[in-house]
Image 1 (spheres, rainbow, N blue to C red):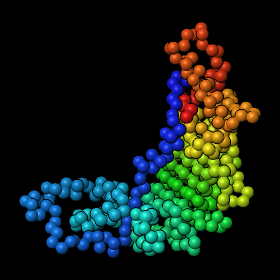
Image 2 (cartoon, rainbow, N blue to C red; image 1 turned 135 degrees about the vertical axis):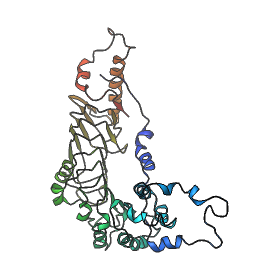
Image 3 (tube, rainbow, N blue to C red; image 1 turned 180 degrees about the vertical axis):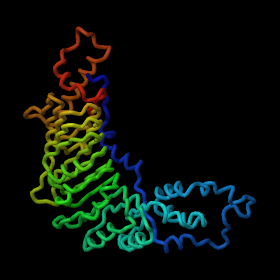
Image 4 (tube, helix red, strand yellow; image 1 turned 45 degrees about the vertical axis):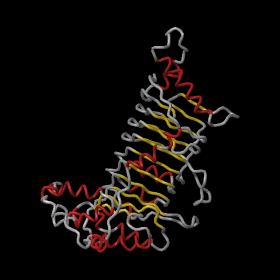
Length: 388
């Protein structure tokens, strides 16, 4: 029986992704050496820190006393300019950037002009011996650069990559935007993967194994149903799955012993495909660790959601106008004919309110409505089920 009921404002529910992005600010990339050298030139008349003030340099520089491994980790987490400029701090710091795991973000922090970013990337990859921690390529325009991008992804500097973000900027919706197979060569080491605005290679999906992948995001990706299921089957430790406005599959079945959070949005626009197929049925067959099932949009979602087994499910954030049926175990919540789909949320709100009241000390045992049948069907979905 549900013992507690929470109501979350829609702003809180649908703003969760933006707040997450604030806390996980993308790590920027690194400038080529000529940029670092220019940044390292001293201004005329400038004295080194601590000299002329009666304070010794060694008394101020406590960070440099840390082990190389610790400093390397710090550098790999710094934004672009800060990470590159550590090479000019002192002789102690000069070799650390090349020894630290590469964190390369091909974004506006590298340069405000895409033309310059395209020039900088191969210089950075040739200057850093690897391994790499993160490679982010958000919103690059494909044009005639497919071979060049593929070459970047095959660089030895990206060996051991743990995080990848790869998204095209769509310029012509009538053209294909294939995901380079080389972007998937990091499958054995990836922990975080974010693919967007691309066509996922169907023939490679059954062969892919992601033994370390914990977070997977697909953003406006064209991926066929069998390829998506094969991809998920190859992620034995996956914890977070975000599916945002993808096409190519109408039904998704979830069977995962580790998945804790699912976020879903279904686009009503298929600008890149003529006869697009969008998600209509989401079936959670067996997800023993699932805690959150969220809608990423208040307007679009799969028409039917069925949860067969999710004993730890606590948060249902499904205020989406397209959702017309929700199955929790053997209990069915369905929009009556002739009613707006938004009424589904109020039906479940009322059910949860009554069942939670019946479970509280405020409800006299003899006067409590007999909802045992409904409640029995919904047992095992977490003690704090939330419908927001």
